[in-house]
Image 1: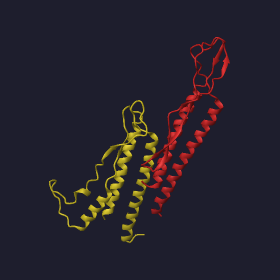
Image 2: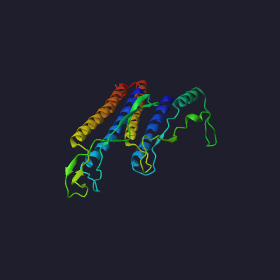
Image 3: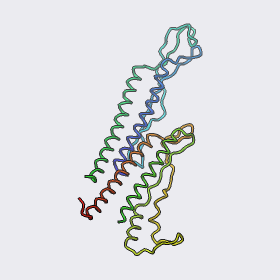
Image 4: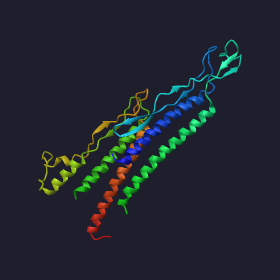
Amino acid sequence: MTEIYRAMNIATHGIRAQGGRMRVIAENIANVHSTPVTAGGDPYRRHIPIITSKFNHQLQANIVSSGKYRLDNSEFPIKLDPSHPGADDTGYVKMPNVNELIEMVDMREAQRAYEANLNVIVSAKSMLTKTINILVN
Amino acid sequence: MNFINLISAKMKWHQTRQSVIAENVANAETPGYQAKDITLPNFKKMLAASQQSANAFNLATTDHKHISPHASYQQTTAFKERLVEPWEVTHSKNAVVLEQEMMRLSENQLGFEMASNIYKRSVKLFKSALGKK
């Protein structure tokens, strides 16, 4: 396997990992208003996407993968809404600890990282194509 | 010229691989489907066999029961299929990763481009022998 194919392979793993991260972020954004069903219960808890690195012997490089997410243990913000079925005795409802702004920034970051990996593939491919095209002229 | 045979074998391999990858992409959502690939034939052995047959006098094989002494180099039509080690298996036991397939697709495309360019070059070689520009 040539070095350039190897580079493309590593970048493809990167694309895959950023896709997995995007999935977790999408889950957070979708659940930004997921309130508890039972009185005094817990709402949706934010998931933190984890990107891990592992050495791959075939590629002789550290490849990334999106591992299992971790739960965000920060406190739930509370909102006064006595009519809500999830409200406790004092009339407060726990809201998910998802901050839309943070999710947006994370999403943009994942998007940029995805594009960076994609650019690695595109330029590796053009490098190889140029080398192959030496034969033509 | 035996290297032409070799290049055409490589191009044939790339063509078969293209269809295998297309099959994988088509089955990207099929439950229980595992991605396939074909193994690269031993080009080194093929080259050695073709050189050997070029140097030796060959017996004509006029019947299908006749055995050619250089049969190994003819064996290029069937490629060995193998299962790809997947990066991820979904709940429906589907083991096709689209990213992986796309990468192999471009790898295959580059390989084919290289082979076809080499072929183009070899044709040019013949043309110059024929006195054409």
